[in-house]
Structure formats: C-alpha cells, structure tokens
Length: 116
Image (cartoon, rainbow, N blue to C red; front, top):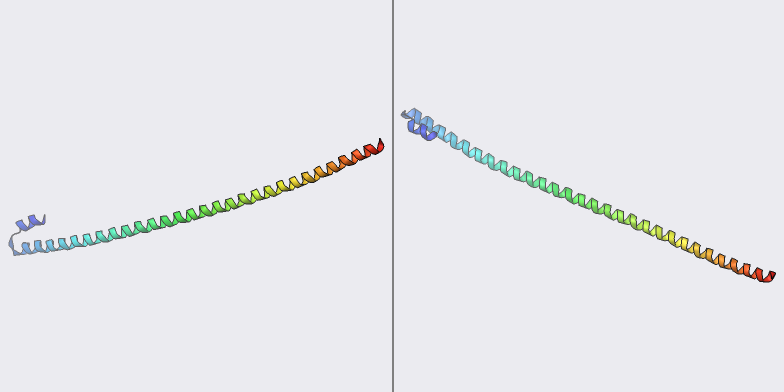
C-alpha cells in the first residue's frame, strides 16, 4: 500500500508525506516485533514458572503420600505387634490352665485311690 502511495505521489509535499508515513510504519513494525518478542519471553517465563510450580506441588504430594504410607505401615506394624502380644498372653494362660487341670486330675486320682 505504501508502495502504491509512493508511485502515485505527485509533488514534493506528497512524496515527503509518503516518506514520513513509511518511516512511521517501519518504526511501528519494529516496535511491534520488539513487543512480540517480549510477550513471547514473558509467556515462556510464565509457562516455566507454572511448570516449576506444578512440579513442586507434585513433589509435595508425593512426599505427603509417602509419609502417609509410612505412617500407615507403622500403625499396621503396631497393630500386628499388639495382636502377637495378645496371642502370647492367651497361649500363656492356656498353658497355665492346662497345668492346673493336670494337677487337679492327679489329685482326683490320688483321692480315688485313697477312698478305694
């Protein structure tokens, strides 16, 4: 379009106006390219920042999950240990009861012999 104006310009004043318009257009084009580059750079930086933040959140989430899993395993281990202690206690009581029953049986036998 500027080229058409340049070809159609008649007289010194019109040529000067076309030249000024051409210079202004070149300046605006350079400014547009500079702003475009800055915008791209900012967008890229923002994307990197968002990705970094997302990675940090993922790491925190993984750490929390690992901590939860560790705490869960600790709790399960504690429950297993308590069950084992309960089983051992019941086993000891059963053995004590068996000894008492054996001694009682022997005494009943002894008394049966004394009576007969």
